[in-house]
Image (cartoon, rainbow, N blue to C red):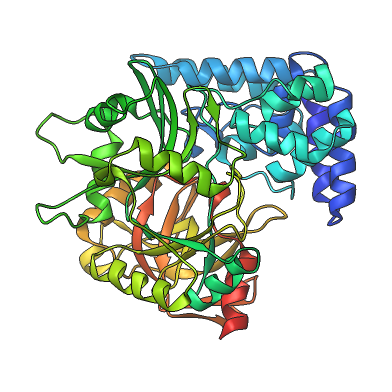
Length: 507
């Protein structure tokens, strides 16, 4: 398949707001794919590249050859070239990367060049999310969308599922199962402004509720196969080598094969959680043995030896977890039918230095990659995970740093909706870090603003949401302040504009 077909599909999808029409257009393109093209095309249709990072910055995209008169590029050629560019390193790599990029763009037509720039910088605006592509995979292969989503959950990505569906249909998707060593998308919690609201959500389906401490750490998924241990983050990044102390705990558990879900964090001498930045710094790179120790706390068990617990009721998974993992490595949990007991447990969690609690259904299966009423988190401070869209050079004491950040909520139809700006809550260390980070992500620069690839997630605390004619979404955050940068989340996991509107409706 030629790249021009993908670009034309992207334009057609961007030109309609109808979800049904978008899915139909995407499915039609997927049907025309052959063999090895399918996984790449599915990725491109979601507005992304197979290579998460190519090493190509915005400067490299400013002076490129004029567009070709006729399309000739295939998606396989483009993917191969970008993979080669991403792998370049060492002396002379910048020159080689520039030459390869110029050769690629010289063969691209005007619309193809525009799409390639957007894909490389993470700014394809077409209104097609990965969820829509999954629906299109189902339509193109005549498979129930529920089967596609479950396979994606187990594969951790849409692309391999798209390839399997097109080649083997529903039977091929049945081959995706929970497997030690192959991470699955983690189950996610929805949010509630207070415990009473969360209680109502969860108890609409069950009477007894589990109330878990919400720890201020990083999400980890642990796999054990004999002496081999794999640790991954919520974005499925392998961090096993960075956390040998956590791997040791998992390796010592009395089972041959395991898949566990939990949190890992740094603790102080008093047993209280250290600031998230210390945990994030410790897990970001390989550090010497005397570095901050990270302690794991597990709250779910998906597999134990030959027992696959993915579809088992939560209470059964937790019983197995309690048998397996000692209390010092389990998240604090209360099982109760009384809201007053849950309120008291929340108060105790906050006093102990935790973020809040997560209320969980005792009967729900592990729905990887999904948010819903089965898990609902409660944090007393209103927070949102937003995406940085741009950043402004600092002035006065902050001169020389990139300071004021532009905040965007995710639009399920595609792109991001700006909600305001803030520099509140930033320490000098944070300013120095974000200056380096946003210089790396820069796509366009002027004296007043640096536009960046929408990749970096930031957790923002705020006092409320108000109507505003200043921003496209008609909303703005009141007294927004930075809590921390979230390298454990991708932009696709940021909070949506609908979530922001819900805060306004509750006001």
